Amino acid sequence: MQNSSMTEQELLTDLLHTERAAIKEYASNCTESACMKLRDLLIDCMTECSEDQFAVFEQMKQRNLYKTKPAEQQEITTAKQEMNTLWLQTR
Image (tube, rainbow, N blue to C red):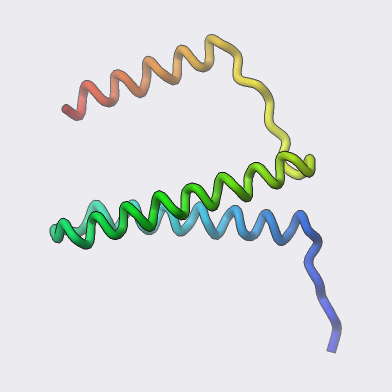
């Protein structure tokens, strides 16, 4: 039997992807639920999972295992405008 151990980067990447998948599942199930108590529970779980995902992301970033680039002001402005437009369309 071969001992196959994962590197720190592989473990953190796997955890990051698992948290992302869980967030998507919570969101999907929340939108499909008509029971407010269940929706509230799913939202709480999704929020906690989102916080965990961010913590993993921060650990990866601190260890230089997840490269990011600063967003340019124009990209930020465009994203805000797009989200505002979407919000207005869904009201």
